[in-house]
Length: 200
Image (tube, rainbow, N blue to C red):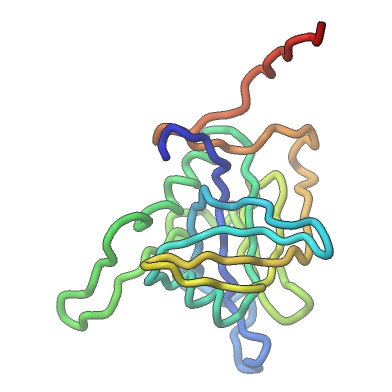
């Protein structure tokens, strides 16, 4: 599959349950509590009767646990620049590798990507006054989604989600860039368009 290019996006998981009235305020949430991962499997599934996306992730995963629990999450479309590459690498640690267990407790040791970011690189987006979503400020667009259906295949989950909102980054030029692409184990950007043959 390394011979095929794909879109690289970062998924971030929610941090606060709508049922929990005792949840801490956003200002007190530690970066160590935030989870997310880099994905190259996000694709459009349907437009009608509602827009649905699909993706897959490897389990066990603390991110998957948060998605199942709170059902709301965010996809980040990244501009094709060096900062996006750095972020994609940070959020890809632990993916496609065997889960690491604590030698004493036997519990899974989860990666904490937000611990590697400065406080100026992310913020919390409050969805309908119920759930806090960590969002990355370097994003061109952020797609807020809700769990629709999940299928378990071996050690992966195939997710189908519905689009609930789209956040446009007003600090980034609105020109379409094609986002950050992943090909042959490296990151790339869209190049020149190919000239199509003229029908005779």
